[in-house]
Image (tube, rainbow, N blue to C red; front, side, top):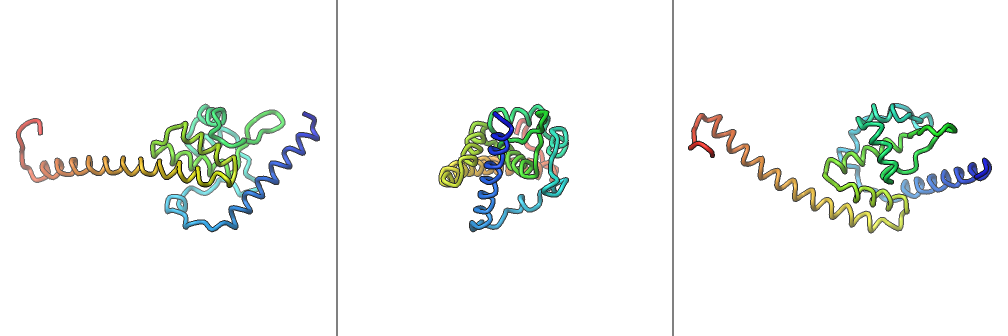
Length: 172
């Protein structure tokens, strides 16, 4: 690919990204959940946000190996590179990694996260499928929360017994 073709391709990608951002800004969006509002601020302002893989690893707590793996399996959107091939991440990439981290915490399978990333890259026409995927996963998360709450009840019961100094037969 010639330098001119690379510039043209990069310009088209930037135009598409700008169009998507503009569409998202105009779309009615529900209020952001508390977890989204309280995330860490970006280390650099937009426009000056070119991070090396080691800087991103330090900021996110992920290893460089994990970041490369995310890119290789399609979990990371296109990561820019310098003319020498070194990855350069943006604030938008940090936001994406924050979302991926939250999905990991909920136990979403990697295959589902990759599918979600593919749908995001495909554009607005995949909103319904994205919603389906996230809705199904939310149901799984709620089931796990219910199981954990039940387990917490058992722990609270046991703690209260021991705190009150009561003894039960051994093994209970």
